[in-house]
Length: 450
Image 1 (cartoon, one colour):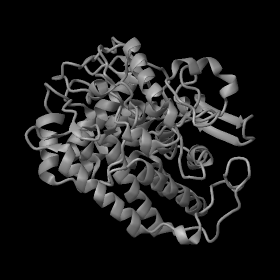
Image 2 (cartoon, rainbow, N blue to C red):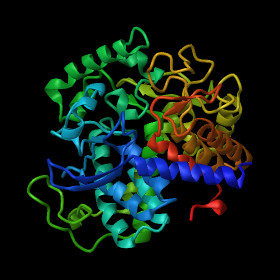
Image 3 (cartoon, one colour):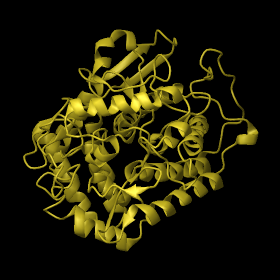
Image 4 (cartoon, rainbow, N blue to C red):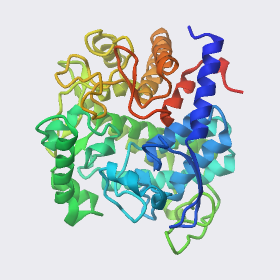
């Protein structure tokens, strides 16, 4: 059990990193104020979608007003269609050199054309629960719904409820080995990844802006378990928010430059398009049903991503395979198999510093970050966050507490790093990594921040 001193140390470290990585100013390209936490000042100085959602969840334990401003940056970048990009380059002109490290396609001069796991509504609900102003939450709901509608319209071409990604970084798990075959990677290294991404970009170039057409090309069409678990729980979070807060009374006018309203949060859609809890519940239920029917493999007791229009299971055992534990209504028998046969298996995921991003039994498992490619073995605090909460959903309180404590021990031992060696606890990647501040959201609620 963590001591009071250890909890205090984690809080202080989280606050320090969230303060150090804070970016504030007014963008040259849009004249809009921004206030967000970047993942890493040295390596990732821009605003990433799911990173910011994790930052907001951590900030909700420290400063709710800052948590609101964190999410506001994402809301301000929403397109009239509802699309929210996975990176917003608020200070692009200042950090041009950093762009050379990224495999990105621009959707405009200062955002990407791609998505990330749709964490927005989950983070919005956590910030609302922490005490965000009700009026701000109410005005944030419609753009969050518009974003979900965009995903349902553009990323579910077969109508099965699962949304698809069209390049690996959209999963948030960039170079994870379940994507190797779909990418046609001959070897696991940076050069091979860049070549594979180059092939994807060339195939998509004539069709960028038409996501349904890009997916129909079937050059990279993946229905990710992790992405769709987040999708399902985002829809449910929005349903609860609508039920609790309702909607703003009237739309605000949009500005001419970017289609965004002048108010702090984008306007509600027209009354005819007003979101309803029933609409979102139906989307979530269809996605959950398909996830259980098509992604679960009864022979191995695990979930796998579906690859290609033909939806062939990837059959690479990674942390994504465990993510359905985050669903509160995952059938108990399936949850038990995930926990018993995979999560707590010392030959797979229950290593000294769990949970590795790839099962130790997989040939592609690389615990030491040797190739420099991410998500191929090291442990990440954000995926542990999902699993801790998922274990609590399913009654595994003692196991959840143990995983939370082992996660905290990583941060105490090596600081808030990008990822960690699952055997030694050594930190890898960026130092002072923003979303690793999520560790404070795993501390006991009774021992909360002031």
